[in-house]
Length: 339
Image 1 (cartoon, helix red, strand yellow):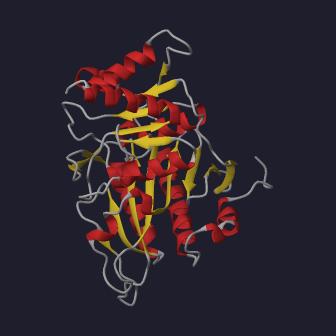
Image 2: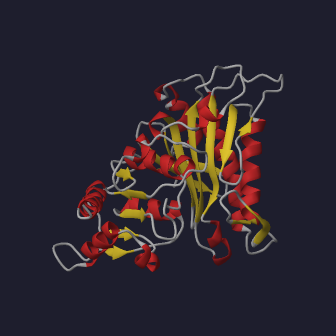
Image 3: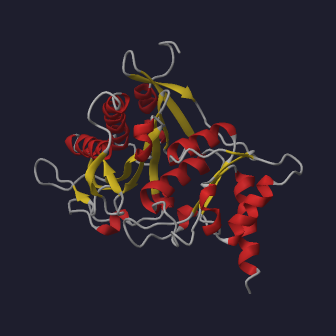
């Protein structure tokens, strides 16, 4: 990587006119996320040296134990976005309710809301496995000048103007889309700059990796069980390879580069699924589709689901287009066989 590579800042400026509303706010949101990601990356890399790992002693709205780094990352991203005065509302996995953001003059003139999972896969922190941040950006629906309402957050994924993730791994990357393809930027830690390292990222139409927690096999719906048997059968280019990290960002990032499918279905233990629609599935679906892949709940396009609550859960199938299509076929056949 040389200094002649395009930096994230340069890329944002060069492509600002491609944004649907090119007034500068969206560029500033991406820049804010870049800054917060560098701060969180610094703490993630020190996780074994300072008192930042372990449980914080509280649970989030999902009933999940909050890790210290969950709380820290949440505070960093929220404060960075608020301090820049570029968003009118923020919703986070770690907060029960959305946050209304006012300007210094008590105005509500900003146009965008951000939804985020500040530290996806945080249960992996203490075993030194990659974790990430997921974010989704929407243009507000309510009139400018008024406080945001729940309506601004409960938008279908098709309304997203930007989405992305940060992966804190062997290298730290920001991968994002504004609806014009997917690009990845790798942090050069020596100078604190992100460089364009993965331009125009694409899923292969077919893949040979499936990512699912097979330990829950007995709890899966029949369609998923049948698809897994298909993946494991010796025929054609199968059996496929099973790879599961347990960090949504890491699993999807790997599959986008190598070709594969990620599945987190409903189960008898989680009848609605586990992943959250608004700040996990929708942003990932936007990225996956922009990279030529497919994302669904097993039957329907994820980004067309009309959300009804802030922390709504859905089953999630995403990845290489033909692999997701095949999984949907098994789901439909199993459903029809019941009748």
